[in-house]
Length: 284
Ligand code: AMP
Image (cartoon, rainbow, N blue to C red):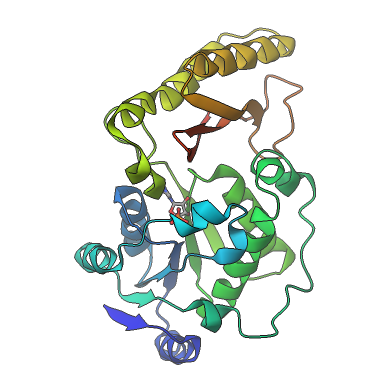
């Protein structure tokens, strides 16, 4: 695996690969890699000639300073996991490399409701920062395929819009959420949970599953609100959880469903022991 720290060196390596007509797949990450990330690398490898991964903990997408400071960094192990998974190129730029002095985020895309609701409501500025760095990375890597996790459901919807608005010519491929045996969605933040909270954290996916099973039985769209409320109450009944939202939404627009034929997703964000976890499940 080749490692690049500077975008100009990475760009010239990619240029050479493109002249050989090799297809390029890209997996952007913030490191502290786990089996969820590796499943993206494996999907990428099976569908493209060259797999490029990036590790960059993007400061502009953290609205919470402590979350940024406590974000786990495990570069040596990440490199080992990527090599084992057969990743071809790793890009690990510095903050200065991605945000040169005097750089301003002008020409922002207005994602409107898609970025203002749910995560956008609870993490102001998060999606502006995320879109900014993903656009920068896509401009450098110019991949044929971009692999992202459904775990960050709202994120992949926004990136899909970004690709469309900027006409980036990359095909986004969304990959299912990889879970622990008890159902907890794998996340770099899980290592910050103590033993008791780690056990309890499985209630998030259990509640999503329960709500999903109830939605399937619904005959009237107005009954969705009651199910959503039950889901929220179920999770909130544990004093350890501070639930930020628990919502049933349209899986494309993130608006509240008005019709039972719409594709739906149940999304949740909850803090437990100071660790903020998100998860979601598609219903139909
Ligand atoms: P992150 O390092 O958290 O920014 O995640 C990098 C990519 O991995 C994003 O596209 C995430 O959606 C994806 N990802 C994170 N956790 C999982 C998981 N448990 N299963 C599948 N993909 C994931």
